[in-house]
Length: 274
Image (cartoon, rainbow, N blue to C red; front, top):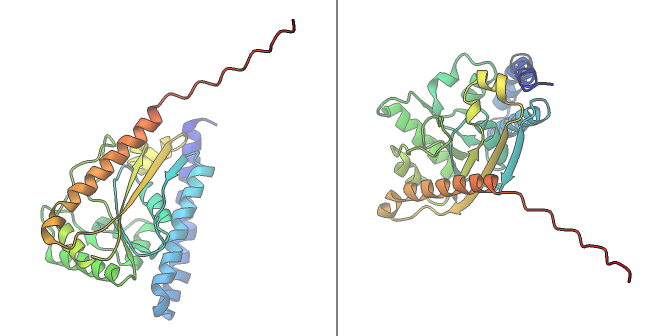
């Protein structure tokens, strides 16, 4: 099977799943169940979100032919995760890695409308929605701080893409620091991890996935935990330190990938009988 054919096969099955399975189950099962059991809402959403991440990765690997290598792990407790952003596959990978409380993910407001399966899960999860203007609105600041409060209570985890957009060349871009210090000040006891994903720059859009996911090799590195500084001045440089960790992790992944394979050991010569 050619790369394009295998990739299209994955895209077709995934699209059918979003429309015919994921969306109806969310409306007919997950939403009513969360409404009937409000105290179990977070646990229900965690199980559903985590399950979706794992299912998408299973489909991408078994049907789409994507390879995935992971170094490190995230804890089963509430935490803050910063990740780079290369492709649409990043979020399923990260969601599957987060074994603790379901992550709150600040994301584009446009994702909450018009995407079968995805928009419903965004609204159900009450993720902070951002217009990504030059400045965050009061409502956006309030949503981020409310999310931080839930993380501080241990109810949810927090997943941040500090670059703010998908990288075109895979390099770690500049971080958008707006609001970061405020969030860190409200979750001082939560450990922080950084996750770097590489090898997915060809999968920026769904069209890219439909043509190129087959044969793609994704490599993931998890680093941490890092403690949030108690001092406000120290927190000002904390984001730079985390970015440095991510840059170093990306370099490590690429150096490992570029390293030549070791030469096979020479077989000992049989001794000639004299």
